[in-house]
Image (cartoon, rainbow, N blue to C red; front, side):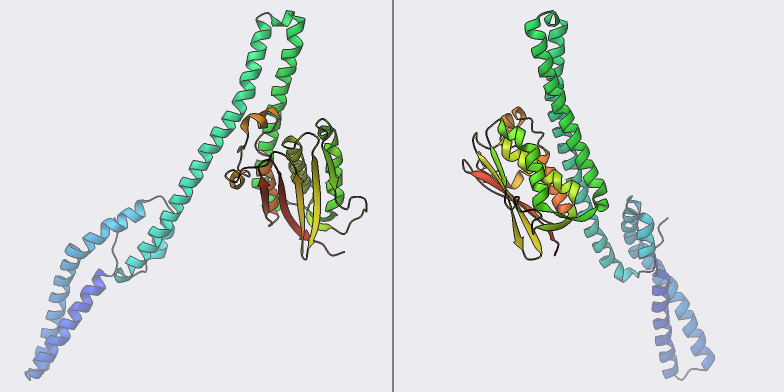
Amino acid sequence: MVYIKTKESASWLIGAVAGICVAAVTIALKAQWWVVLLASLLTFVLISLIALWFIVKYVAYKLRPIYSVVFSRDVHTGEIVDELKDKRVENISDELNAWADDNDKEISRLKDAEKFRKQYLGNVAHELKTPVFNIQGYISTLLDGGLEDEMVNRKYLERAEKSVDRMINIINDLDTIARLESDMNEMRFESFDIVALAKDIAEQSEMEASKRNISITVKGADNLPSRFWVSADKFYIGQVLENLITNSIRYGKDGGHTKITCRDMLDKILVEVEDDGIGIAKSDAPRVFERFYRTDKGRSREQGGTGLGLAIVKHVVEGHGEHVSVRSELGVGSTFTFTLKKVEL
Protein backbone atom coordinates (compact mmCIF):
# COMPACT_ATOMS: atom_id res chain seq x y z
CA MET A 1 0.00 0.00 0.00
CA VAL A 2 1.27 3.45 -0.91
CA TYR A 3 1.55 5.72 2.11
CA ILE A 4 0.99 9.45 1.58
CA LYS A 5 3.07 11.46 4.00
CA THR A 6 2.26 14.75 5.80
CA LYS A 7 -1.53 14.27 6.05
CA GLU A 8 -1.31 13.80 9.87
CA SER A 9 0.98 16.78 10.36
CA ALA A 10 -1.27 18.88 8.15
CA SER A 11 -4.36 17.94 10.18
CA TRP A 12 -2.50 18.64 13.46
CA LEU A 13 -1.52 22.06 12.17
CA ILE A 14 -5.15 22.86 11.31
CA GLY A 15 -6.26 21.62 14.75
CA ALA A 16 -3.60 23.69 16.49
CA VAL A 17 -4.66 26.85 14.67
CA ALA A 18 -8.28 26.19 15.62
CA GLY A 19 -7.30 25.51 19.26
CA ILE A 20 -5.34 28.78 19.44
CA CYS A 21 -8.28 30.68 18.03
CA VAL A 22 -10.65 29.14 20.62
CA ALA A 23 -8.18 29.90 23.41
CA ALA A 24 -7.98 33.52 22.30
CA VAL A 25 -11.75 33.80 22.26
CA THR A 26 -12.22 32.22 25.73
CA ILE A 27 -9.47 34.41 27.17
CA ALA A 28 -11.18 37.44 25.71
CA LEU A 29 -14.37 36.31 27.47
CA LYS A 30 -12.39 36.18 30.75
CA ALA A 31 -13.03 32.49 31.28
CA GLN A 32 -11.12 30.53 33.92
CA TRP A 33 -7.79 28.98 32.91
CA TRP A 34 -9.00 25.39 33.02
CA VAL A 35 -11.92 26.30 30.76
CA VAL A 36 -9.52 27.88 28.28
CA LEU A 37 -7.26 24.80 28.38
CA LEU A 38 -10.09 22.31 28.06
CA ALA A 39 -11.78 24.20 25.23
CA SER A 40 -8.46 24.50 23.38
CA LEU A 41 -7.62 20.79 23.74
CA LEU A 42 -11.09 19.64 22.72
CA THR A 43 -11.04 21.97 19.72
CA PHE A 44 -7.54 20.78 18.74
CA VAL A 45 -8.50 17.10 18.88
CA LEU A 46 -11.87 17.52 17.20
CA ILE A 47 -10.68 19.79 14.39
CA SER A 48 -7.56 17.62 13.82
CA LEU A 49 -9.68 14.48 13.40
CA ILE A 50 -12.13 16.23 11.10
CA ALA A 51 -9.27 17.71 9.03
CA LEU A 52 -7.54 14.32 8.83
CA TRP A 53 -10.76 12.69 7.63
CA PHE A 54 -11.21 15.30 4.90
CA ILE A 55 -7.58 15.07 3.81
CA VAL A 56 -7.67 11.26 3.60
CA LYS A 57 -11.01 11.23 1.81
CA TYR A 58 -10.63 14.12 -0.61
CA VAL A 59 -6.86 14.69 -0.98
CA ALA A 60 -4.80 11.59 -0.21
CA TYR A 61 -6.98 9.27 -2.25
CA LYS A 62 -6.30 11.43 -5.30
CA LEU A 63 -2.53 11.40 -4.72
CA ARG A 64 -2.32 7.67 -4.01
CA PRO A 65 -3.00 6.59 -7.62
CA ILE A 66 -0.26 8.94 -8.82
CA TYR A 67 2.24 7.40 -6.42
CA SER A 68 1.02 3.92 -7.31
CA VAL A 69 1.54 4.50 -11.02
CA VAL A 70 5.00 5.96 -10.45
CA PHE A 71 6.13 3.23 -8.09
CA SER A 72 4.69 0.41 -10.18
CA ARG A 73 6.88 1.33 -13.15
CA ASP A 74 9.96 -0.84 -13.48
CA VAL A 75 12.35 2.10 -13.59
CA HIS A 76 14.53 2.06 -10.49
CA THR A 77 11.51 2.06 -8.14
CA GLY A 78 13.72 1.87 -5.07
CA GLU A 79 15.59 4.98 -6.11
CA ILE A 80 12.33 6.87 -6.66
CA VAL A 81 11.03 5.84 -3.21
CA ASP A 82 14.27 6.93 -1.53
CA GLU A 83 14.21 10.22 -3.39
CA LEU A 84 10.56 11.07 -2.68
CA LYS A 85 9.99 9.58 0.76
CA ASP A 86 10.91 12.79 2.61
CA LYS A 87 9.20 15.17 0.19
CA ARG A 88 6.13 17.09 1.28
CA VAL A 89 2.89 16.75 -0.62
CA GLU A 90 2.97 20.37 -1.69
CA ASN A 91 6.43 19.86 -3.30
CA ILE A 92 5.82 16.50 -4.91
CA SER A 93 4.46 17.96 -8.18
CA ASP A 94 7.86 19.33 -9.21
CA GLU A 95 9.52 16.03 -8.41
CA LEU A 96 7.00 14.04 -10.44
CA ASN A 97 7.25 16.43 -13.40
CA ALA A 98 11.04 16.15 -13.38
CA TRP A 99 10.81 12.37 -13.17
CA ALA A 100 8.28 12.30 -16.03
CA ASP A 101 10.58 14.41 -18.24
CA ASP A 102 13.54 12.14 -17.54
CA ASN A 103 11.39 9.09 -18.17
CA ASP A 104 10.17 10.48 -21.51
CA LYS A 105 13.76 11.12 -22.59
CA GLU A 106 14.77 7.59 -21.60
CA ILE A 107 11.81 6.09 -23.46
CA SER A 108 12.71 8.12 -26.55
CA ARG A 109 16.32 6.96 -26.34
CA LEU A 110 15.27 3.33 -25.98
CA LYS A 111 12.90 3.62 -28.96
CA ASP A 112 15.70 5.07 -31.09
CA ALA A 113 18.03 2.27 -29.96
CA GLU A 114 15.40 -0.36 -30.77
CA LYS A 115 14.81 1.17 -34.21
CA PHE A 116 18.55 1.19 -34.88
CA ARG A 117 18.87 -2.42 -33.68
CA LYS A 118 16.10 -3.64 -35.99
CA GLN A 119 17.55 -1.72 -38.93
CA TYR A 120 21.03 -3.01 -38.18
CA LEU A 121 19.90 -6.66 -37.94
CA GLY A 122 17.92 -6.24 -41.15
CA ASN A 123 20.97 -4.86 -42.94
CA VAL A 124 23.19 -7.67 -41.68
CA ALA A 125 20.68 -10.29 -42.81
CA HIS A 126 20.35 -8.61 -46.21
CA GLU A 127 24.10 -8.37 -46.75
CA LEU A 128 24.72 -12.00 -45.79
CA LYS A 129 21.73 -13.31 -47.74
CA THR A 130 23.19 -12.51 -51.17
CA PRO A 131 26.47 -14.46 -50.86
CA VAL A 132 24.73 -17.35 -49.03
CA PHE A 133 22.13 -17.74 -51.80
CA ASN A 134 24.87 -17.48 -54.42
CA ILE A 135 26.87 -20.25 -52.76
CA GLN A 136 23.74 -22.37 -52.45
CA GLY A 137 22.97 -21.90 -56.14
CA TYR A 138 26.49 -22.76 -57.28
CA ILE A 139 26.67 -25.89 -55.10
CA SER A 140 23.21 -27.05 -56.23
CA THR A 141 24.26 -26.65 -59.86
CA LEU A 142 27.41 -28.69 -59.25
CA LEU A 143 25.49 -31.43 -57.44
CA ASP A 144 22.93 -31.59 -60.24
CA GLY A 145 25.59 -32.62 -62.74
CA GLY A 146 27.76 -29.59 -63.18
CA LEU A 147 30.56 -31.19 -61.16
CA GLU A 148 31.33 -33.57 -64.06
CA ASP A 149 31.43 -30.73 -66.60
CA GLU A 150 34.96 -29.32 -66.65
CA MET A 151 33.70 -26.12 -68.30
CA VAL A 152 31.31 -25.50 -65.41
CA ASN A 153 32.77 -26.92 -62.22
CA ARG A 154 35.84 -24.72 -61.92
CA LYS A 155 33.95 -21.55 -62.89
CA TYR A 156 31.23 -22.20 -60.29
CA LEU A 157 33.73 -23.13 -57.59
CA GLU A 158 35.59 -19.86 -58.22
CA ARG A 159 32.30 -17.94 -57.95
CA ALA A 160 31.43 -19.76 -54.73
CA GLU A 161 34.88 -18.91 -53.35
CA LYS A 162 34.30 -15.24 -54.21
CA SER A 163 31.01 -15.29 -52.28
CA VAL A 164 32.73 -16.97 -49.31
CA ASP A 165 35.40 -14.26 -49.35
CA ARG A 166 32.67 -11.64 -49.33
CA MET A 167 31.03 -13.29 -46.30
CA ILE A 168 34.37 -13.40 -44.50
CA ASN A 169 34.92 -9.69 -45.19
CA ILE A 170 31.48 -8.81 -43.82
CA ILE A 171 32.04 -10.92 -40.69
CA ASN A 172 35.50 -9.42 -40.14
CA ASP A 173 34.13 -5.88 -40.44
CA LEU A 174 31.25 -6.68 -38.09
CA ASP A 175 33.75 -8.07 -35.61
CA THR A 176 35.87 -4.94 -35.94
CA ILE A 177 32.91 -2.65 -35.22
CA ALA A 178 31.89 -4.80 -32.24
CA ARG A 179 35.42 -4.53 -30.82
CA LEU A 180 35.50 -0.79 -31.42
CA GLU A 181 32.21 -0.30 -29.57
CA SER A 182 33.30 -2.36 -26.58
CA ASP A 183 37.04 -1.64 -26.36
CA MET A 184 37.43 1.99 -27.41
CA ASN A 185 38.70 2.85 -23.92
CA GLU A 186 41.49 0.30 -24.35
CA MET A 187 43.20 2.00 -27.29
CA ARG A 188 46.99 1.96 -27.13
CA PHE A 189 48.11 5.50 -27.83
CA GLU A 190 51.65 6.00 -29.10
CA SER A 191 53.61 8.57 -31.05
CA PHE A 192 54.30 7.71 -34.69
CA ASP A 193 54.91 9.24 -38.10
CA ILE A 194 51.53 9.40 -39.88
CA VAL A 195 53.21 9.95 -43.26
CA ALA A 196 55.31 6.80 -42.84
CA LEU A 197 52.18 4.82 -41.91
CA ALA A 198 50.30 6.21 -44.92
CA LYS A 199 53.22 5.22 -47.17
CA ASP A 200 53.14 1.64 -45.82
CA ILE A 201 49.38 1.32 -46.37
CA ALA A 202 49.68 2.84 -49.85
CA GLU A 203 52.38 0.33 -50.82
CA GLN A 204 50.18 -2.53 -49.63
CA SER A 205 47.38 -1.22 -51.89
CA GLU A 206 49.49 -0.78 -55.00
CA MET A 207 48.68 -4.22 -56.41
CA GLU A 208 44.93 -3.58 -56.27
CA ALA A 209 45.42 -0.06 -57.64
CA SER A 210 47.53 -1.33 -60.54
CA LYS A 211 44.59 -3.44 -61.79
CA ARG A 212 42.85 -0.16 -62.67
CA ASN A 213 46.03 1.78 -63.43
CA ILE A 214 45.46 4.07 -60.44
CA SER A 215 48.50 5.79 -58.95
CA ILE A 216 48.86 6.56 -55.24
CA THR A 217 51.05 9.32 -53.83
CA VAL A 218 51.77 10.34 -50.25
CA LYS A 219 52.93 13.89 -49.72
CA GLY A 220 56.19 13.99 -47.76
CA ALA A 221 56.82 10.25 -48.13
CA ASP A 222 60.22 10.84 -49.78
CA ASN A 223 61.60 12.60 -46.71
CA LEU A 224 61.16 10.19 -43.80
CA PRO A 225 60.94 10.69 -40.95
CA SER A 226 58.49 13.49 -41.69
CA ARG A 227 57.45 16.32 -39.40
CA PHE A 228 53.92 14.96 -39.15
CA TRP A 229 53.89 12.97 -35.91
CA VAL A 230 50.68 12.15 -34.06
CA SER A 231 49.53 10.53 -30.83
CA ALA A 232 47.02 7.78 -31.62
CA ASP A 233 46.44 4.04 -31.81
CA LYS A 234 48.65 3.07 -34.74
CA PHE A 235 46.79 -0.17 -35.52
CA TYR A 236 43.35 1.45 -35.73
CA ILE A 237 44.59 4.51 -37.65
CA GLY A 238 46.16 2.04 -40.07
CA GLN A 239 42.68 0.57 -40.56
CA VAL A 240 41.29 4.06 -41.21
CA LEU A 241 43.88 4.73 -43.92
CA GLU A 242 43.42 1.26 -45.40
CA ASN A 243 39.65 1.70 -45.69
CA LEU A 244 39.90 5.20 -47.17
CA ILE A 245 42.59 4.23 -49.69
CA THR A 246 40.71 1.06 -50.66
CA ASN A 247 37.54 3.11 -51.20
CA SER A 248 39.44 5.61 -53.36
CA ILE A 249 40.58 2.71 -55.56
CA ARG A 250 37.18 1.01 -55.77
CA TYR A 251 35.34 4.20 -56.68
CA GLY A 252 38.16 5.90 -58.58
CA LYS A 253 38.31 6.11 -62.35
CA ASP A 254 40.58 3.92 -64.45
CA GLY A 255 43.92 5.63 -64.84
CA GLY A 256 43.07 7.96 -62.00
CA HIS A 257 44.98 9.14 -58.99
CA THR A 258 44.72 8.85 -55.19
CA LYS A 259 46.56 11.43 -53.09
CA ILE A 260 47.18 11.29 -49.34
CA THR A 261 48.13 14.66 -47.86
CA CYS A 262 49.04 15.68 -44.30
CA ARG A 263 48.76 19.27 -43.10
CA ASP A 264 49.99 20.97 -39.92
CA MET A 265 47.02 22.56 -38.11
CA LEU A 266 48.78 23.92 -34.98
CA ASP A 267 47.85 21.31 -32.33
CA LYS A 268 46.36 18.90 -34.90
CA ILE A 269 47.48 17.03 -37.97
CA LEU A 270 44.95 17.06 -40.81
CA VAL A 271 44.96 13.96 -43.04
CA GLU A 272 43.26 14.03 -46.45
CA VAL A 273 42.64 11.10 -48.79
CA GLU A 274 41.61 12.48 -52.18
CA ASP A 275 40.53 10.68 -55.37
CA ASP A 276 39.27 11.75 -58.79
CA GLY A 277 36.58 9.10 -59.06
CA ILE A 278 32.81 8.99 -59.42
CA GLY A 279 32.13 11.25 -56.43
CA ILE A 280 29.17 11.32 -54.05
CA ALA A 281 25.87 13.13 -54.48
CA LYS A 282 25.07 15.88 -51.94
CA SER A 283 22.02 13.93 -50.77
CA ASP A 284 24.17 10.88 -49.99
CA ALA A 285 27.14 12.65 -48.39
CA PRO A 286 25.61 12.98 -44.86
CA ARG A 287 24.91 9.23 -44.73
CA VAL A 288 28.09 7.68 -46.16
CA PHE A 289 29.37 6.88 -42.65
CA GLU A 290 26.28 4.85 -41.76
CA ARG A 291 26.61 1.09 -41.57
CA PHE A 292 25.81 -0.68 -44.85
CA TYR A 293 24.88 2.57 -46.59
CA ARG A 294 25.95 2.61 -50.22
CA THR A 295 25.64 5.33 -52.82
CA ASP A 296 25.93 2.76 -55.62
CA LYS A 297 24.73 -0.59 -54.28
CA GLY A 298 25.36 -2.60 -57.43
CA ARG A 299 28.90 -1.39 -57.94
CA SER A 300 29.74 -1.66 -54.24
CA ARG A 301 28.94 -5.35 -54.15
CA GLU A 302 30.66 -5.93 -57.48
CA GLN A 303 33.83 -4.34 -56.07
CA GLY A 304 33.61 -6.46 -52.91
CA GLY A 305 32.67 -3.69 -50.50
CA THR A 306 30.85 -4.60 -47.31
CA GLY A 307 29.31 -1.19 -46.64
CA LEU A 308 31.05 -1.07 -43.25
CA GLY A 309 34.40 0.48 -44.11
CA LEU A 310 33.41 4.11 -43.57
CA ALA A 311 31.45 3.20 -40.43
CA ILE A 312 34.70 1.74 -39.04
CA VAL A 313 36.54 4.93 -40.06
CA LYS A 314 34.04 7.06 -38.15
CA HIS A 315 34.17 4.81 -35.05
CA VAL A 316 37.96 4.92 -34.91
CA VAL A 317 38.36 8.65 -35.51
CA GLU A 318 35.62 9.61 -33.03
CA GLY A 319 37.11 7.13 -30.56
CA HIS A 320 40.21 9.34 -30.66
CA GLY A 321 38.04 12.36 -29.86
CA GLU A 322 38.50 13.70 -33.40
CA HIS A 323 36.26 14.33 -36.42
CA VAL A 324 36.00 12.85 -39.92
CA SER A 325 34.27 14.55 -42.86
CA VAL A 326 33.86 14.27 -46.62
CA ARG A 327 33.84 16.75 -49.51
CA SER A 328 32.64 15.42 -52.82
CA GLU A 329 31.20 16.27 -56.21
CA LEU A 330 29.65 13.84 -58.67
CA GLY A 331 31.99 13.04 -61.54
CA VAL A 332 34.86 14.99 -59.96
CA GLY A 333 35.94 12.97 -56.93
CA SER A 334 35.87 12.80 -53.15
CA THR A 335 38.12 13.97 -50.33
CA PHE A 336 37.89 12.35 -46.90
CA THR A 337 39.44 14.34 -44.07
CA PHE A 338 40.19 13.53 -40.44
CA THR A 339 42.32 15.04 -37.68
CA LEU A 340 44.67 13.59 -35.08
CA LYS A 341 46.45 15.06 -32.08
CA LYS A 342 49.84 16.44 -33.05
CA VAL A 343 53.06 15.48 -31.25
CA GLU A 344 55.75 18.13 -30.94
CA LEU A 345 59.12 16.77 -31.99
